Amino acid sequence: MPDTLFAYILHSEGKIDDTALELITAAEKIDPDRPAVAVVFGNGGELEAVCGELAASYQEVWKIDNPALAHQNAEIIRGLLCRILPEKSTILLPHEHFGMDLCPGLSVKLDAAYLPDVVDIEGIADGKLKAVREEYSGQVSTHIQGDISGGAVITLRPGLFPADESRGQSGQVVDKTEAAFQGETPGSSRRFIEIVEAEAGDIDITKSDILISVGRGIEDEENLDIVNKLAKLMGGDVSCSRPIVDAKWLEKSRQVGTSGQTVKPKVYLALGISGSFQHMGGIKGAPFVVAVNKNAKAPVFQQADIGVVADILDFVPKLTEKISEMKG
Amino acid sequence: MEILVCVKRVPDTAENEIEINRDGTGIQQDDLVYSVNEWDNYAVEEAIQIRDNVGGTVTVLSVGDEDSEEVLRREMAMGADNGILLSDPALIDSDGRGVASAIKAAVDKGSYDLILTGAQADDGAGQVGGMLAAMLDWPYASLVSAIEILDDKKLKVGREISGGNLEMNEIDLPCVLSIQTGINEPRYVGIRGIRKVASMEIPVQGVSDLGISPDSVGSAGAKVNRMDYFVPELGEGAEMLEGSTDEILDKLAELLKSKGGIK
Image 1 (tube, chains in turn orange, cyan):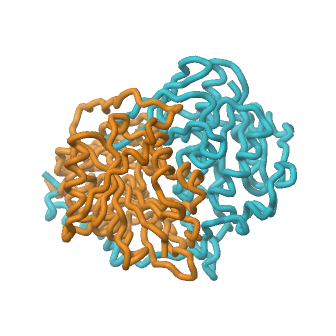
Image 2 (spheres, helix red, strand yellow):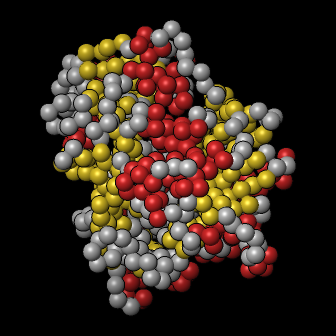
Image 3 (cartoon, chains in turn purple, green):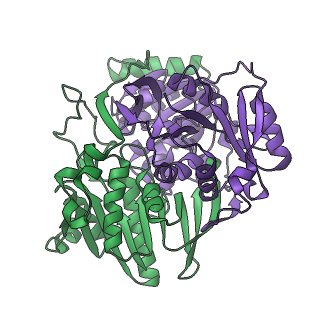
């Protein structure tokens, strides 16, 4: 069992992130007997509100409160964590942009094992933590084992561990600000300037009921016509996965996924989209999902309701024709 | 600016159906189409553009077996000036830390201002760049999708965060950045380009050249080991429509209509 287990809490605008309660479940799978301690960085009233919310779910909450933490800078936080985490600690974080920024370097500085983007935890045997990851764009899974005797940094894929909603604690909030800062802010060779918000597009796909979403399988910009025609006929809007935006064939505002838009349609057509977790993570509200992909192993088929193995360049024009006939 | 870009040879998952071998120890290698990791290709393009803008050299480095030479050569055909291959039996089955420590040793032998990696590769871990930066005590920024050179001491970088927003930071040189796809449009490499660099020498360095102990890397030095590959049972998955194309189209059109997918 790890000596001490911590859960790093993300929050914004005074509210805890969904992952804050998922980490409780993950921590129980590592050590069912000793609950994780929440550790949360922030500033002022927002941090107070977050700590209040956390105390309902965690027995112990460590807060670090300083104006320098109003925007979370991975380099500063790494220095502070190294000061306050006891030796051989295991710390859990969500695998998202902040975790990816902080954790590889944190594991080096703590001289701890790094287990990134874990999708399941099987428990500890012979002093080693056994966990599950995915490789090759989610086409296959692997068991990994990490020697956590010297501590570990573990990032967990958001949305896979059920949130512990029991809120049965009346936890204690411990102020670790002094211990973290020791009278000075760790210097940072990377300085936050500002957040530049994404530009709004011509269509707000977050409001669409029917999304015809296109991915790499479209192969060429010119082929987008077949998708536009289908969308027009169905009365839906065209959205896409990341490679289409990377190729500059559609605007960023049309991209569904964790680094793009979160959509809540009733019907979602995934055309030539492999279905990475970053893409599927942007689809909420349990829509009816139809996937068409020529690769039968594409992970999108694990999450779709209906699947068709076909080349979209052949299939989509035929589907358009079919629906056109049906509409008369 | 002296720029090092770390690249990896990976199976192209958009083109391949990955199958696990019989005993679950690896994937079936036969008939796989390999290419340079997509994120790395954007990193190389970015490095070439920076060099063309401010001068300097671009060196591409890969950790892998002799087949990795082909991706180094491909990136040299794109415009990288030099290639280095870190290859040694002792490096096989290294964890992220092992790979990063081998690269760190190579960095110490050179003189670089900027190191770029792809934001992630085929294992989705996205770990080597951040580890390398921590080992070098250089600043790090992940998921970078915009770079502006401010002067010879610092850059302005945009990190891609949630919702398509960018977190803008100033970062001191030397530094390590992990590059997100879409930051640029990587140039096309033709057969001709590859022929041009066919005779350029790519030095191969092993652990003794790098001055690292064989026990500190590979499976011996790894804190994290892969035990097996498997295909998870994920419940039902999609109902796959089968039959003739006409049958599939009939059924799908009906389903879409009944679910409100046709207005």
